[in-house]
Structures are given as structure tokens and as C-alpha cells.
Amino acid sequence: MPNYIKTPSSSRRKISVTTFGGGMNASLDESVLPLSVAKRIYNFDFSAGALTEGYGLEAEPLSARAITNIWTFKRHDFDTAADEEIIMFSDIYGKVYYLRGGTEHELSGISFTSVPQAVTYRLYGDDVILLTSETDAMAVWDGKSTPYTVPDSPLITSMAMHYERMFCTVAGERNAVWFSSDLDPTNWDLELDKGGFIQMLDERGKLNKVISYLNYIYIFRDYGISRLSAFADQSDFFVGNLFVSSGKIYARSVALCGDCVLFLASDGIYRFDGLSTRKILSAVSPLVLPSAAAAGVFHEGKYYLSFRAAFDESDSAAEEQNNAVLVYDLKNGAYSILKGASVTAFASKDERLIAVTADGRTALLSRCGHVFGEPTVKKWTSGLSDLGTERIKTVRELYIESDDAFTLTVESENTKREFFVLPEAGITKVRANVRGRKIGVTLTAHTAKARLTRPTVIFSS
Image 1 (cartoon, rainbow, N blue to C red):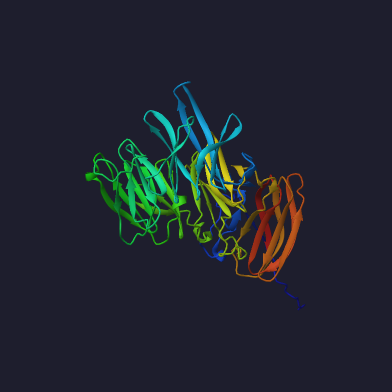
Image 2 (image 1 turned 135 degrees about the vertical axis):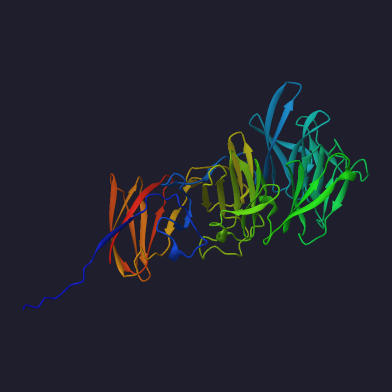
């Protein structure tokens, strides 16, 4: 009987990523992630299932000055019966400027020693902008007359108008909410029928941010949220506590987003509905680094959050500047992350969102795929997966559809190969020949525009 040498069979299998809509999950070990879910993704938009260009910063030079904060003053001019929206900003020297008719003007006689903030109010029948900072008295401007200051105002760190009173948190011990006289946010006299303050001394820590929401004043503190019932006479004001946080709340990230409030804490992003608080975007939470300078805003149905993130080992916890912007759509839960932009403040102007960077420049935040003309590095990285079999396997080929050049990286626990790919019409084929027990794939685009879709991995084991 003849002798035959039996050779092991090698079966070819394929795995296709039909959609990238699964996004990223940084909270799970990469070995348990399906190939369709990334362990890291940034500068790509994946809301439609394909990888396309994500958000970036388009140059919008409003001034040659280095800007520290920006806001809009919406006023009605009763003399001309016209509405006006004025862009205002502060510079690194504490001066305040505004744009009118395309021309920059200085707000004369006003200067701040720390970064100011602003809120609009109708005072004695005229729309005014109230400007405050944690080291300076309040300044008031009606858009046409000479501005003036309110010497006896507290040093305000945040403020909100509520039932014709100004409520604010103040510098110093930060253990009290102050409120102005009824119908006059420039009157801070400490009398029963005028202004006053309410102290809060408990484990929730310092008082950092106030907002008016659902007929209450909500106070965001270091480690919790308190609620102030403030109707009519101040003798009837009442404070209750709602939430104790396990992580520190970053006050400037707090944004009223229609019917809810979103904010960043040191352990992730939260949604607050006036009574209960729950964490959202848990898949993103492991990226969050301490973000004292985090800034949030609600614009056109989306929550924009500038914060510090750790995408890889090179992102140092010692850095202080923000390095990422999260864009979260409240309607459908889709999100996108811009990496490599240090944004310190936002302001809505019509349908546009203006961002201020750490070096004082202004830009439009949009889905443009670049930062000041330099294409962002767009990256999608899978986990190291066994592809459904514990056997050693060889990745033979990958097929992918793309409109622009990109880099494909295929790696195992002991091999890594990188391919620069110029796409062909239709589906592009790449021969990989990477062998190992676990396989990972990375797609990187260095172009402003991008579209990558439906990758298929062919392997044998």
C-alpha cells in the first residue's frame, strides 16, 4: 500500500467591516473588541458608516490681537427698531473690543486683570451686556453709551439671570451663591429687600458655576450639584442637594443643551435632567485626563467640549492645555473627536461656531478635516483580535474602497507591516502576508478630505 504524506489543510476565511458606525470603545480590553469597533479613532467622522473627514479649524481672523475669550452681544436698538448681534472679545492685556460694521473698536475705560465673561440683560428697558471676572468689578455697556463699572459688585466667577435677579458664584472661599436686587443686577446691597448671599458648607466642595434651568438655579460644585429655589421674596429661597460626584466637575464644561445639561467630570461625561445624573459616552471616558481648562458649549443641536485626552502614551498628563474637541449630537448619540486642537473658548454667531485657541487665534469649528490649512492626521485603529479562531493565522489580503491615498498598517503580536496605498477605481487590494495569533489593523489618512469604507480581511489558518 503506498504511503502518502498528509499535509495540513489551510482554509481561507474573510471578515468584512460593513460599517464603521460602531465607533470606538476605549473602556474594553482590545482583545475582546470586534474588528468593526476601534480601540482608538480620531479626526474621522464615522456617523454615516464610512470613515470621512472629521472636524477641524478654519481660519477666521477677527483680530490681529491675541484673544482670551469671545462672546456675542444680542441687542435690540429701539431707536432704529433693528436687532444687532455684536461680536466682543478680550485680549491678553485685559482690554475689551467689539466688531461693528467690520471695524474693530475698543470698549473705552474698561480693563480686566483676569479673563472676563459676559451675559446679556434688559436693564431699565435697554439691552446691556454685563462683563465680570474673578478679580474685577462688573462693567455694564448698552452698545452705544460709555460703559461704566459697578464698584460694589462681588468678584464674579459665573453668573445667570433668573426671575430678574442675577445669581452668581464668587471668588475667594467659593462657598456662597450671591444674588442681586430684584430687577437690577447692578444692585448688590445686602438688604432683605435687595441683594444677599446663601452659604453652602458640605462635602460637595466649592461653588463654581450657576445656571438657570427648569425654574431653578442649579449650582455646580467641585463634587456635586445643588438646587436653589428662588421665587419672589428672598426669605423664601430654599436650597437642596441633588448629586454627589465621584469625580471633580469642571465648571466651564457645563452647558445647557435644550432639555438637559451636559458636563465633564474627571471620570467622564454626564447628562443631567434636573433631578438625576447619568454618565454618557462611557466608551470615551478612559481617554479623559484632568481638564481644568475644559470648555463646553451647545450649538445647533450638538454639545462641543474642549478637553484633555490621552490617545496614546505620548499624551502626557503633565500638559495643561486642552488637546481635543468632542462633538456630540444629542439627537442621535453620534460623536466625533478632533485631536490636535487646543481650544479655550467658544461663541455662537448665527449658524457658525467660533473657537478661540490657546495661542489667541480665532477659527470656525467645522467638518473641514484640517486645522488652519494643515490636514489633520486621521486614524482608526482596531484592537488586536484573534479573528474568531485561536489558531495562528496569516492575513493574506485586504480589500478596501477609498477616494484618497491612505496608509494601511497590519500587525500581529510579533510582526508589523505598513503600506502606503494609492486607491484604484472601485475596490483596492493590498497583499499583507502578516502572520500571528492576534491581528490588528490601522487606517491612517493624511489628506484633508477622506473616505474609507467596507474593508475586508482575507486570512488563512
